[in-house]
Image 1 (cartoon, rainbow, N blue to C red):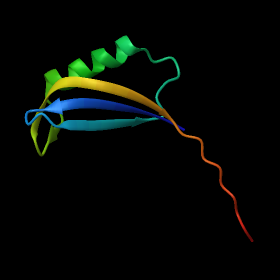
Image 2: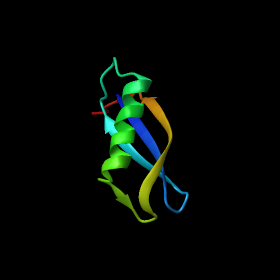
Image 3: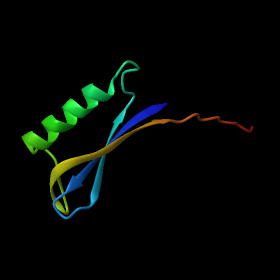
Length: 71
């Protein structure tokens, strides 16, 4: 399972993370940066530390889960 974690800086200088589950496999750094700019400009998300004011980074997290079931 993959998750795209968008990291922003809020008005207090703290990191705010937004996660997107199952991002497209062909998503590019340029596309993600552009979307983050739109999120900041539209001011659609708020945090306890104020508005999102800057991009900090992005992490693409790939998690493998192995499940064992016991009867």
